[in-house]
Image 1 (cartoon, rainbow, N blue to C red):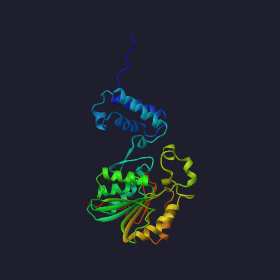
Image 2 (image 1 turned 135 degrees about the vertical axis):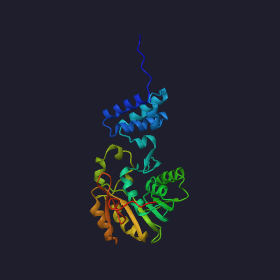
Image 3 (image 1 turned 90 degrees about the vertical axis):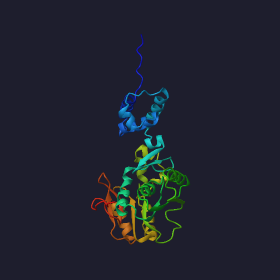
Image 4 (image 1 turned 30 degrees about the vertical axis):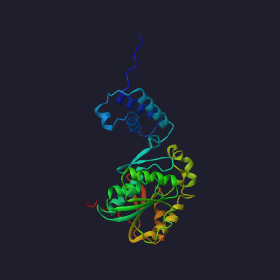
Length: 297
């Protein structure tokens, strides 16, 4: 008599997918397996914990197996699922935009400290991509309005869709232009940007998840990785209001150089802020979240 294979359950499928990804040397195999399982089955994280023996349908198992196979080929989970969480919002992502990373949330730490709840201010996100920084800020600060610029029509389409999905399109505008070209002097209270900052020669050595799936336009910072900052520093100085704040993401080893570029553009009080991994991540003239108290509501 042939022994029948037991029907796959949520917990069994999670464990099996985790083991497969771990064997394939995928970072965070358990988390990736759970995210793929949730979408393949329509189950929530809570469902997996409270109803672990729910049976998967054949179609759900096939879907999950396909997702796991793609992850083993080093396709990021965000690309497989077409979405990525950032700060407290969920964003659609496509091959035309950089997949948002937790490192970038260090900009939000500065912004949240600089602009208390209900503060009214105008901001611009230069090279907005998916709209991550702009939309995460607007979602937190009801008094804020903002503009996102990009040179990619495709990226702007993604950002606009994200704004609509988050019901922020009444406070967010998107425009195709190079950095802040076309905007008047002293137009904004806050300027943010996550520009391309990886030296051209370093791109071939990046992890496949980045090298093969993020747009090189959003990665390539020129020969030394600093090309965008040389353009941005004087432009940000031009469009920022006298008491305004800027915050730009940097590579972990670029703090001194980028700080010097903004000081040369005429900024005072420029500091380098570290991320949660204790690496230099943001150059700003705003407050340092590590040395300033969080403002009360």
